[in-house]
Amino acid sequence: MAIAQSKVVVGYRRYLELIADLTEGKELIASGMTQEVERCRQALRRAQEGEIVALISSGDPGVYGMAGLAIELAAAEDLAMDLEIVPGVSSANAAAGRLGAPLMLDYAAISLSDLLVPWKIIRGRLEAVAAADLVVALYNPRSKKRTRQLAETAAILRKYRPGTTPVGIGTAVGTDEEQIIRTDLDHFVDEKVGMRSIVLVGNRSSRWIDGWLITPRGYRV
Amino acid sequence: MAIAQSKVVVGYRRYLELIADLTEGKELIASGMTQEVERCRQALRRAQEGEIVALISSGDPGVYGMAGLAIELAAAEDLAMDLEIVPGVSSANAAAGRLGAPLMLDYAAISLSDLLVPWKIIRGRLEAVAAADLVVALYNPRSKKRTRQLAETAAILRKYRPGTTPVGIGTAVGTDEEQIIRTDLDHFVDEKVGMRSIVLVGNRSSRWIDGWLITPRGYRV
Image 1 (cartoon, rainbow over the protein chains, first blue to last red):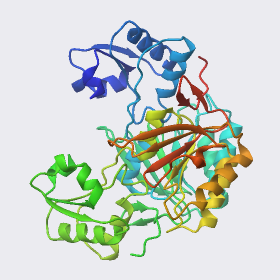
Image 2 (image 1 turned 30 degrees about the vertical axis):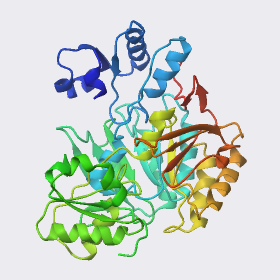
Image 3 (image 1 turned 180 degrees about the horizontal axis):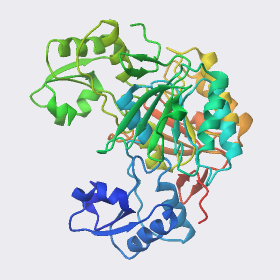
Image 4 (image 1 turned 135 degrees about the horizontal axis):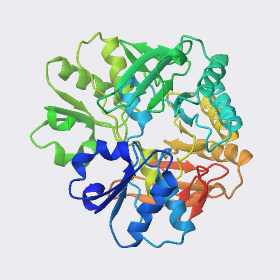
């Protein structure tokens, strides 16, 4: 809907390809990965010129997406314009739906990317949520160059949860390349996990039921 | 889309009213609050009879919704049927979008309802995520009869974060009665917070920018 109303659509190249059916006749501004700041500036510039601009994120733009950066940049450059954040289905929720209902109880979303946040802080958060028995959704779990963090995360979680704790991995959920893997805490690090994956680690009561990953909420069934 | 394909729509009465435009000509089975188990059984029974049934949750059915219960009940009663979980925008994400981008960094979703989970466990989780400086989304923060938990939660968070920490409250987001409140850790307990509210508590780096609630991710802007 927001895309339909816009004249200019700005986004990471791959995402623009995925929504090609929605952008016919519109001006497209595509850019590469890790160019978030420049991409955002371009979108704001065009909006400042009076165009209605859609800045695309995958999933929910408010969860490790472009929403915060857009607001920060607009303020830093003192740009006056109407901003609207259109929420979406975050990739943890999309992956959870394919796997069952692992997020039915209290959970934490944690990104393993230490590009913008020191690893020491991320590690402390993992330790805290592991000890508090929260279900954990790991964003940006591993890239080709960044592999150590996922192994360390597994070690932290194993201090508090049995190796048989259910783990689900959703990769490229909602696309043609979607892949769903059902595994456990002892083995998930050896599975195919990349930057398009979400890793969902159950808490101590999560379990598999008929192939579905469930965190029971406590109803008597 | 899933609703359009179904013949029978089952849900909490208020939610069915909200989607009346999508259910014309379909069989509706409405029930009251706290009748989750019976509602779910009805939906499964009709599906077992061969109907295509949509069981409605607000937000994301996989986050404190009906998805887990449906899978558990289907397994407990040994029912063979095709189940599909259709993910949605959870209320924390919807409220976050109205307020800005508070969930841009690691966060935890915690329900303050101790109907199904002992308060002692919930309190321990609040303590852990407060200490680990996670943004916190509080689900089911307060009801008419259950008020103590929110006050205790505020006290726990204040041990680790200044009273000026930004807090946003979204109530009935996406409906005609939507209400957005911008406040802080010292004052949010005195605001209007009910069972249709989500309370978003910033971490130590969250702040207000031009009226938007932001948790900066660390980009240089």
